[in-house]
Length: 317
Picture 1: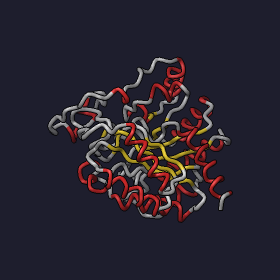
Picture 2: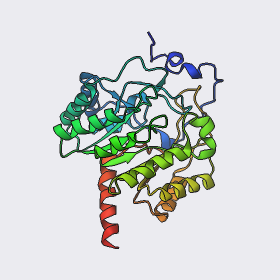
Picture 3: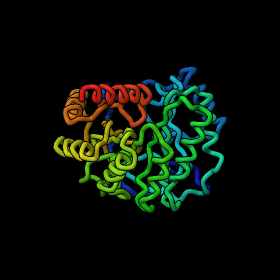
Picture 4: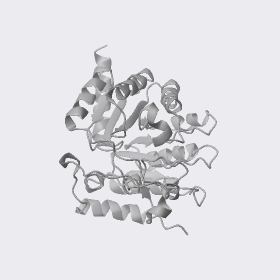
């Protein structure tokens, strides 16, 4: 039995990689340890429902703040991913079991107990399943709607690269409020950072969501500090806008262990502010670009701003 608390068993494909030096974090990256009562309440509900969160599995630096406010990003379809991205802290390998048919109901129950106005649901990659988990996403969305009809739902999906293209329709027909799929990095770094994915496939996936449902908000994000340059980031923004993506997130890459992809540099808050300004200039409805930005960080507040931005734009047309 694998012990996922042991790095060598959590990431067996990285065990033989040479250690990469982990530079000291600048003061703008530091976060407080999670100790609040709200954090403990959220943690207890997750344990009670036997749910996995990307907050813990991906070692998110914002877990203390988000859980302290009762916000958590649910990670469905298990805790073992079939991909081996070099930036990611989620356990990798062959998932040990089939999908849990009761999981959508448990996620919906946790959403109700936490009283969430906005929830983010993500997943591991499940290349071992014919539809990549598309129907499981749809069932989870429907279960949340039944128990918490006023809750807005944001999903962060895999790329479904090994599936029939029609599986995307299953997820879109379930009507999430926001469809998010992260490009993660610039095209030139895909072979090293995201070897199991293809940049233009991910971009086309988001474009197809808008073709299937033009009213659905789409969202994508990248990390910086992996070795990209500013020109490459600007080109990703252009590509995203050509695919009619509404919401862009940009955050600092943080190296989970010495076996993961190295941090090339820490991008300054001033550079993030410049990226945000450029992105708004290119037509995004919503942009979050800070060192600690993550896909679901402040997702509820940002969704409200996203919706308001669309209404304001239509009012000015």
